[in-house]
Amino acid sequence: MLAQGVVVREGEILLVKQKVKRGDIVWNFPGGGVETGETYEQACIREVKEETGYHVNIIKSLIEKEGKYTYLCEVVSGFLAIEDDEDILDVRWVDLQDDTYFDDVSRPTVDLIRKNLEAL
Image 1 (tube, one colour):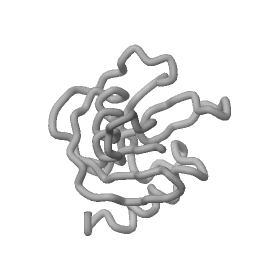
Image 2 (tube, rainbow, N blue to C red; image 1 turned 120 degrees about the vertical axis):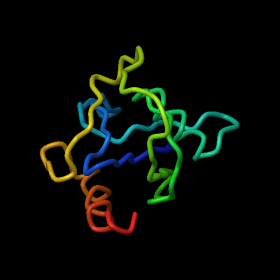
Image 3 (tube, rainbow, N blue to C red; image 1 turned 45 degrees about the horizontal axis):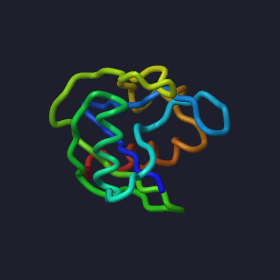
């Protein structure tokens, strides 16, 4: 079970560069596994904080699919930072229109955000 946060502000989206289980290095939304006793929402908030340094609030659920929950989030406080995590190589704000950061896994979510940006 996984939970991840899509954090958007001022036309940019927050991404982490990380090693994934299949061995690739990709830009992804901050997130990870749900720990025992956590809700998906709690896991999302914790993972975003651990991977990016930001404390976030969940605005709404975006996607629930195959044990993976994706939430639209907003920054409440904090500063961009990487904790001592061997899987996180970089974290940055990326222009929503810069397709070079998105792959077949992340692009459908980014397209959803782009289409609905005014409504979000």
